[in-house]
Length: 348
Image 1 (tube, rainbow, N blue to C red):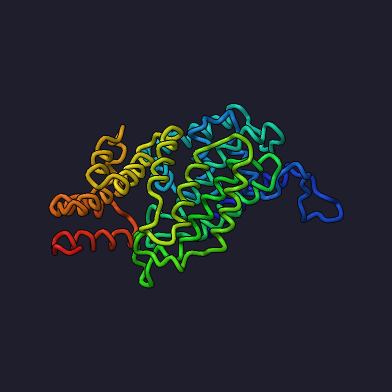
Image 2 (image 1 turned 180 degrees about the vertical axis):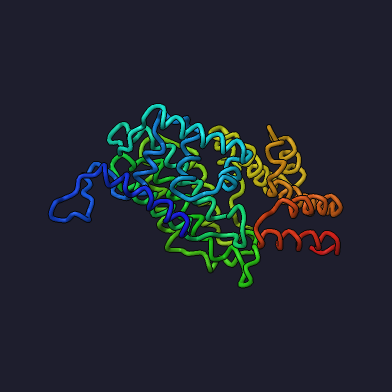
């Protein structure tokens, strides 16, 4: 947090030069109603200038304003640190070559940048919800900041779009479950193991409210579909009553928006819960560009769980061992070690 704040504060001088100040209140920036008042969100919009390649816009926003390391960004995009470093270098060169002004877009120009800002906020929340490295599985301060910024964006006329409300719904519905994702010792709990009485019903209600707002108009986005999946989990009274058929249907639609291997892996889990673990394994093995998941520990963790359901303990232990080698957070490694021990001991 300190690192992010320090990084951001170095930008204030640039922001201050662009904003007119009221002579009677020199320390208070004056923002017209059509502009966004939060400094960090305003600078995100600057990072997402159309002249910067789309794949570099989000990386630049995460690095410059959110304080993400190159390693964290590479995890988010399932690519190498070298590839991210090149994106960042090229983005900075583009800004210098084209003399991109540090100005706040308005109207249609602001809306053009909305998708990149939403993706930045989505990845910011994801890094908080499941940290890619470190001691803690959850970094709540990142989740809270992502929600705060998305709420601010939703209140702005240009940001008050169905996909913004859908993203906010997704964040809230997932954030409502944070308290139940670990036990008192910080150990990871699977969805079926979580105490649902610890799920924050007030936050779930807020999420469902924004999900309803996202239904305005004919637009549908990947955030709508992900929020719909999160709603299926959040409204199920227990794991057994989860509407997995509905979840699988939503994943079938989501794959048309985002055919990434991670989405395909999540869909394979839904397939397993609807059609059985063997079908889930076959679906996971057939994921297009599956090699992109070679360093993704959750792929091996999912394969291990499905092998365990089939009582293939030797195969499951092999998968869990690989997942353990790749996992980077303490709680995830402890969880995987327990699953591996169950395979060896023959438990359930």
